[in-house]
Image (cartoon, rainbow, N blue to C red):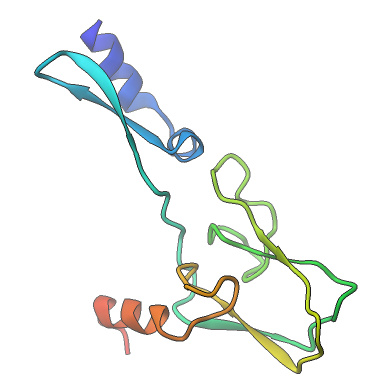
Amino acid sequence: MIRMLMKRCFTVQLKDLEETAKVIRLNKQNKKAETEQFTPIPTSPVLGPIKIEDPKVSNKTYRWCACGLSQKQPLCDGSHQGTSFKPYRFTLEQETDSLELCGCKLTKSVPFCDGQTCVNLRKQSGQP
């Protein structure tokens, strides 16, 4: 039974883990499988804002990519399928020349770049 649980634990796909938001691990003391909650971490394709020029007001619903996997950053192309991530939908209520959407996917003001999270990430990674 323990081997079967261990085999299942090691063959679980990353997408399956994100979808259930649980990690299965084997407790060696009581020989039972336990689950732990975890928060999926998005991929950060750009450490900084991504600018959208001349955005449409009211009649267009934007879908901001929350997972970081989209090939059409910062907008969603459906690459999150099979994960626990969902795009953030929003519309603009007033006209603006441009939008600065978050590229690191860790902003505190979703979907807009907060200007601080990416700076901290750059410092931690040694990037200028």
